Amino acid sequence: MPYQRILDDLLQSVGGHAALLLDGEGEVAIQAGTRDERHRLIGAYQGIGLATARKTLAKYGGGGPIRYMLCRYAAGVVILRPLKDGYYLILSMPIDGRVAEGVHRSEVTQEKLNREL
Image (tube, rainbow, N blue to C red; front, side, top):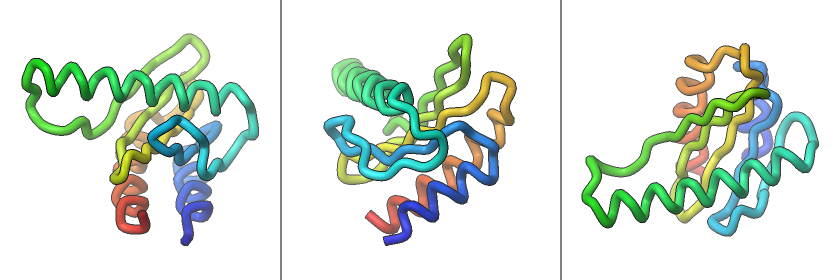
């Protein structure tokens, strides 16, 4: 399975800090880019946010599935993309990075990963 290559390609295309493929429990399956424990913690935290958002949508009736979540912090930007089978993709970018391109390229990566899962 070419998961590592897919994540490496995503990072190279947008200049991000890290890209992580996580399972439904928030455990990192594959990681590309900067090896930093903070990225793993941020990924798990973002998974909790995704689960909460999904529960809220289910309870109050949302407009469809979540396509992505984008969070801006003082030190950077995190883009989360839900994948099939409970997996999700996290892309960590610098605050002054090419965020719009990160959103677009992460969508392409989301499609690739879903085909491989």
